[in-house]
Length: 59
Image 1 (cartoon, rainbow, N blue to C red):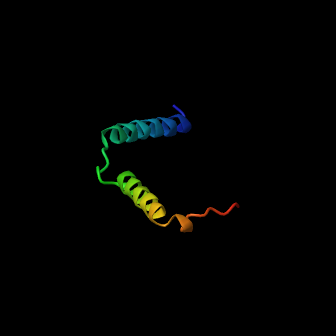
Image 2 (image 1 turned 45 degrees about the horizontal axis):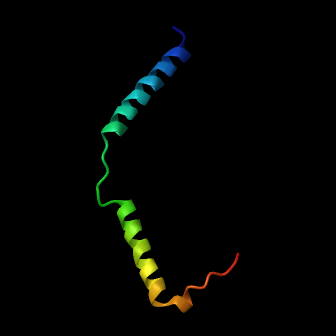
């Protein structure tokens, strides 16, 4: 078996290991998405409180 075939086999084995690891990974429930969602809610509420400051300038 040539060196390049062994090298590709090692990459394939490692890729399989990483895929298995990724499939079992569960991020913390209080991660980025909920914080971003609440930030957007807070922003929306602030815009409702001060509608005159909510002007959007064209780019």
